[in-house]
Image (cartoon, rainbow, N blue to C red):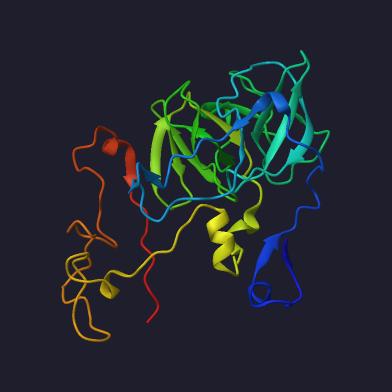
Length: 280
């Protein structure tokens, strides 16, 4: 649920945040956090990553994307906010005493039980098992691309994939992007959808909130000089002067396919994502 504020300032007038009432008011588990190293911005005074830099000092929570602690029941202890991702996380405690962070599925509550197994178990919310044991049509998240690799697909807030078919030891998935892809039926997946689906509707309201996230301002190419960008130059509000947009390094941009045509995993893509048409 989105939370709005009274318009006390221009930045607050249109800003919104996600309500976190259902989360636990606790500090992150100390043994599962480390200081996050900054890998963007400048190196020796030179920009290494465009439009990134600054941001708040953060602790990184170690998330268990593999969830390979099999056949040991676990209980949800806390539901927490994670500044490093759009989804919320949950601290689970296994019956042998070990604690781990996992991606929180939508609808999870404190005290719920979850189970990881390589065998067939109930397809309850949060349970993790191979795709071949999950009923067709079930929503899944944190899916492996290769067995024992750890979850790679459908990990962002509100994301979920649908298990469409299983044939010849391969499972077909409909991903959040509408792409249909096949993976091994032995790949693990968690039942449900990722928490915090309202995240995509947040209005950040002011530039300062973006700087806290580490996102720096972006200048239009057509506002630059010709020496700085292919779109630059001209008098006043000039068009880019090209048939198609380009990057600062002269490569095609905006809507151009960048995937390697000879990539060995192309054979696993049944159908590519459907492009959204711009409204005229």
